[in-house]
Amino acid sequence: MATILVTGGAGYLGSHLCRRLAADGHLPVTFDSLVTGDTACVRWGPLVVGDLRDRTALSRALTLYRPDAVAHCAGSRDAVPGRRYACDVGGALALLEAMQDHEVRRIAAAGCASVYGTPDQPVDEDAPLAPAGPAATAKMIVERMLLDAGVAYDMRTACLRLPPLAGADPTVPAGVLEGAPMPGGHLLARAVSAALAGAGALAAGSDFRTSDYLHVVDAAEGMARSLGHLLAGGRTLVLNLGTGRGNTPEEVLAAVGRATGRRLAPPVGTEVLPPWPVPLAGRASAALGWRPERSGLEQVVTSLVRAGRARSVA
Image 1 (cartoon, rainbow, N blue to C red):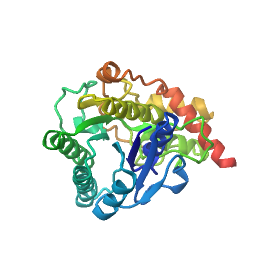
Image 2 (image 1 turned 30 degrees about the horizontal axis):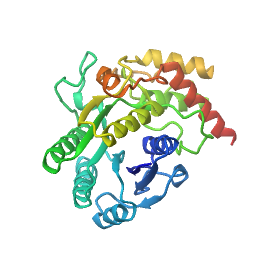
Image 3 (image 1 turned 135 degrees about the vertical axis):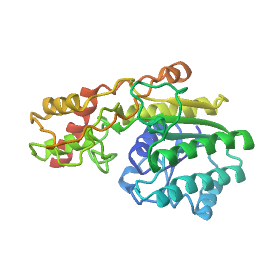
Image 4 (image 1 turned 90 degrees about the horizontal axis):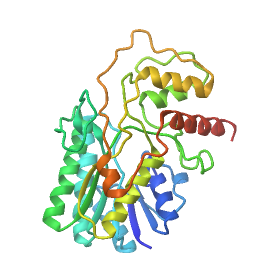
């Protein structure tokens, strides 16, 4: 059994990862500020409340639990560039320095495929990085920091580039892992929320663009496998996770309509935005044996609808 410090373990991806790690016999230790996380999501190991930039809290957690590796799922949702960089980049820097101080040499981090910008074709890991906006730029900087720390501190790292996450775990009672059952601001999440609320149309401002959507359980599986790879002595990895297929807004709305029985109309005058990157995951399949087994559009939508309906009557 390994002990894994999971930053952001009270959040959407982090809580699903903690469940996956516990199922494998590991001890997940959640480190979370609870600014957006929920204590109801911490069920498979201890919780340490703290901000990643608080080096005293980090040192206390590392001293007490002596983790074998770190899973870095924490991140800000702040749209203000300065605050975003301070949280994401400053937090990652403090984490890496604390890991060095406590001789923790393995880290897997959840990044974002938005580091590729807005390419018009699916991309593999060799595609140039062209982040648009502070959120994607912060993810790119953190990834570069992890790789540099690997060279400077003899750390092994796994940097995973993820598309938007969606879905709910069907084996967990509604509301336990989904503090917000339809997390995120992307089109799929908003469409499911609108349909379950009885709306006939999406609200203005919906993110009307083509996107790959990865089931959160598949993302947690990829994170867990990358940690297993590192703990077994594997080399540093930079990998995409995703289905390799973009879903158009029309396909998303049709799938939500089939799952809910409610046809949604797009907002009047909606601007069709550039597509999110569609990451190709052939290297993750080869290196980790990973497959997006739950990430078909119908599967993702159905799991969200079931979770949302269950919450409404709980």
